[in-house]
Length: 247
View 1 (cartoon, rainbow, N blue to C red):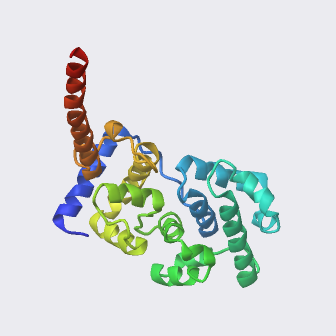
View 2 (cartoon, rainbow, N blue to C red):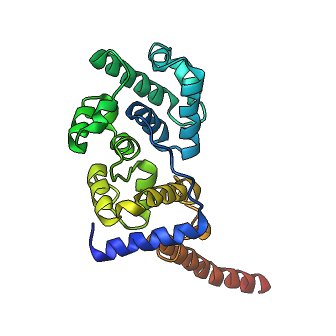
C-alpha cells in the first residue's frame, strides 16, 4: 500500500478535496469513554450527527450510569437521525454495562498514562472494539495516537478510487493508510475522505460529474466512457429511424 504511487495518489486526493471541502475544527480531546460512544455514533454517519448525539448524551442524562440503565428506546431517541439506531443503541449500552461490570465505574482514563499498545490491548476486551473504526477513533481522540478510522462509507470511496480492493480487510487497510499518510495530515485526510463519502461518493450511484476527483478516479472515468459509448451507439439508430420514416 505504501508504495510511492499509492502515497502520491493519496496526497493528490487530499489536495483536490481541500479545494471543495472546508475541514471542520478538530474535535476536542475526549475521554476514552466519550470516544467510544462517539465512535459508535460516528461510524457510517457524519461528524455533525456524531457531535450532536454525544452532546445529547452529556446534556440529556444525569451521567453515564443513567444511560447504562436506560431502555434501548430511550437511547435510540438520541440517535434518531442515524441509520441502524437499534444496533448503535445496543452497542452503547452494552459497552457501558461491560465497563461497569469490570470497573464498578465509568473511568478509563488511567489507560491514557500507559503505552498505547498496552491501552489498546486492554480496550479490546470490550465488545465495542470489535469495530476497528471505533478502536481507531478512540486511539486518535483519546489516546492521541496516529489513526485513520475506516468505515463502510470511506472504504467505498477508497475502492472506487482504486486505492484498495473491495474485499480489503479494514484493519490491514487502516494500517497501510497510516503508513502512507503522515500523522500531521491524518486528521485532515480522514475528514476530507468522509466529506467525499457522504457528499458525492454515496452508496448506490455516485455523483461523479460533481466530484472533485473525477479526473483521477477510475470509476468516474469508466462511467464517462460508458456514457459516451452509449450516446454514440444511440446516434446511428436515430438517423436510421428518420430515414425510414421519410421513405
